[in-house]
Length: 157
Ligand code: HEC
Image (tube, rainbow, N blue to C red; front, side, top):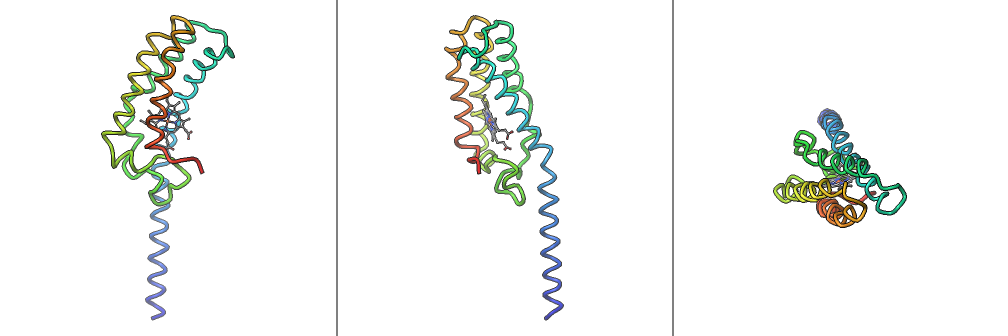
């Protein structure tokens, strides 16, 4: 009997260790996709600062920010989103806020990404034409971020 418990305990340790190793396997992918999100946020922030008058409008800088956003949004990033790297996976709670729905409702998640590309394309075409042109396209960009975060990103803990 004692021996059976010992074996069971050993198995449990082995399972825990393999789960920990599994979580670590995705750390690079999670880091990379968060970095892409930070690039989105930085460039949207530049445009927002110009709209709010916190940064003087500059056509070249505005175009650069919008084109950076578009470039990041059109990057082929499937490798950064491996199946099983969601917050409900063993060991990943607190390490990622990506919901399992990113994979279980995959076509919907991809559409949310396409909405950002569409909004960023318009912004890239407009940002060099003045603050009002940024303003006119800003809502759609923000809505595309929210349109994905609401269903596909878990709330902050
Ligand atoms: C197609 C879905 C999708 C779109 C579009 C999207 N996001 Fe995200 N975003 C996510 C998910 C999912 C996470 C959580 C990633 C993780 O924790 O692994 C996230 C995380 C973030 C984070 C936190 C990154 C970190 O360091 O933890 C920021 C900031 C962010 N997004 C900004 C934006 C902005 C700004 C936009 C729009 C310009 C945007 N996102 C558009 C899905 C999206």
